[in-house]
Image (tube, rainbow, N blue to C red; front, side, top):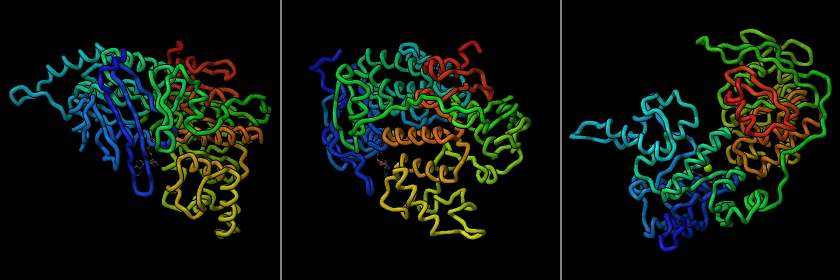
Length: 508
Ligand SMILES: Nc1ncnc2c1ncn2[C@@H]1O[C@H](COP(=O)(O)OP(=O)(O)O)[C@@H](O)[C@H]1O
Ligand SMILES: [Mg+2]
């Protein structure tokens, strides 16, 4: 497929891009050939998105050159990049929910005939593109009715509709279940066979090894290696990414006891509009046990966590902590009585980004030692304890007085775990604890969860990372439309089997 006479689709040379206080890319080199899938891998914050935004005309590099199909170009905006055949699907989708697929695809590039929008021509073209690459979606359905996999197809269609010959996909699989990933990869193979160049960003290395023809590794803003998948194992790739050796999530000598710590019985929850969010949910988590919840996002996981934390009151059913009915308790009382919480969204629920680390140490724990003595805030106690957390949880920070926002995602998460573990909890609710953190911090957080289990905590683990769920859980329940639809044994279940159960394909 690769023809050495054809100039590379993309040739980046010595690219440097700085933001105030951060060198996001430094002396980056990248060559992407037509007819290939070129994967870019690197830890969170390594500079992948910045590089792609530079290639897409969103950032202007301080140094370096951008070559497209053999010509050195200057890109003042995405419009310039689009006119040169570059298309980008961003990490966060940018579709208008209240418009149809067709309207979204043509938005900003409306076809006209004698001044009128020619939707008929547009529809024909969309159908042609969709069929050619196996990206079928109904052009007339509203985007808000589509699942994540279909939305992504619409984004790709939109880019192809504008004539892209080089397609950038920024972490496209982060939001997909395994079956959808396979479908995406099929489409990518079709596209490269048509001579497109595909730039595929991911930090899931098994996927990268499956789909990529070439792999470039970025570490701390610079390209450290370009390799062929046949030349490396996923472990070697991971080590290139972090520059050192790594552990895996696997646990497994059981520490499960028969002491029930957290119990839900027949919990149902309705939305204000009367829509069922949770339906008859029951489980028991024992001391020393990790219960994993698998599910496609938006199937009740967040509501389940909020119900356990007392942010929502179930319409029926009970929540019990160590045998005591706590259904009516406030969130604060639950925390004071031993439920720790690592929230899904660090920015919204976990940390006050514009406050110092030690102020964050007190957040949600103001009423407990060492942050208070009687009715008083104990500033000194809180500071000393923050220092302890920073040291024992390996939070990389210059001091405890910096703002939380200045830490990397992984270090923010370690601070939260440290804070939550400090109240001597008996139950730990961990919602996507390693989402968006780099592989080094991920390994550290896995270690902390394993320690929690060993110390006898009952852990409820919600995660979209199926390897993480399988690696850390003692048992797994699958949630679909607010109901548990399957139980899985992590010793034997595969991610594919979980994926089937999550989408209801397992006969549910
Ligand atoms: N618009 C921006 N302003 C300031 N800093 C940024 C901006 N975009 C990214 N950064 C910083 O640049 C670095 C690289 O980020 P990014 O390219 O998003 O990494 P990746 O996509 O590999 O996770 C990070 O330290 C990030 O905080
Ligand atoms: Mg990124």
